[in-house]
Amino acid sequence: MNLEISIFPFGSKNLFEALIFFALGLVVGFINNIAGGASSLSLPIMILLGLPPTVANGTNRFGMLLGVLSSVFSLKRYGYLRMDIAKTLLLPTLIGAVLGTLFLVTIDDSSFQGLLAVVMVAVAIMSSLGTDPFGKPPKAPPAKLGLKAFLGFMAVGLYGTLLQVGVGFIQIFALRKYSGLDLKQVNAIKNFITIWLLLISSVGLFFAGKIIFSFAFCMALGGILGGYLGSKFQHKHDQIWIKRFIQIASILLAVKLIYDLMINHQSLS
Image (cartoon, rainbow, N blue to C red; front, side, top):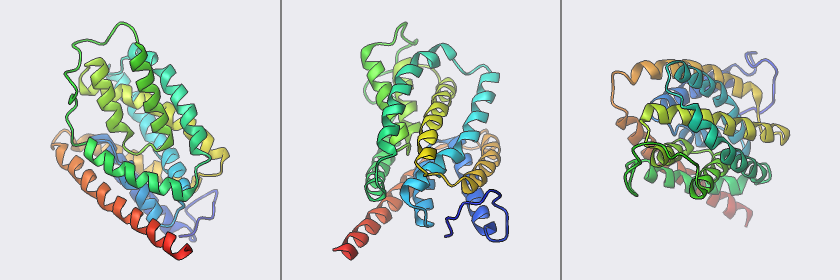
């Protein structure tokens, strides 16, 4: 696949790539709107299409930003966004995001691909767990953010910027365990926090030269349409089959990534 950056991606030379990334953005926007975790599909697919792993990571994040922004505005308008809790969790999230970005911009492609494969399997397992395997959530959010919660959400911020794959599942788990809010409110806070994760990591990846904006732009356009279709679909169908699909696909794609790493290692030795 041609990785040359173009200002306007719809020329004849890049039309095929534009359509591929538009379709990928549509699928990502659709799945993220319904179940979350679509990066566990989009990242390895982009790598298999020929993008270096760290470039795929940066392009994927920037392409998702517009869809997440749109989601937050909609949820806030409907009254689901608890800004009091979101602001409380913002500081530890930002600290973790900055630390994660410092690691992210220095990691090499081979290390990132191997780490990604391991995490994808872990995400597939975690996404099948209930929201409270370590005890029931509280009936109401705590009055103050304790040290454990501060460090926990800082760790989520670090993970969300370093790898980002499956961070939606981790955020939902952590927010439900911390706040006891319903899933619509949890999803609104999750998306608000995700905006900051994407912004900080995208800035770092931009300066590191890890974003192909033409592809990210096509993904963003597809993501808007995918999010709209997903919002209509989720009112009529159960989300469980999407989550199962992500789990199975994540494991299969992780195996493919590990296989590629082994082949590359043998060719170098």
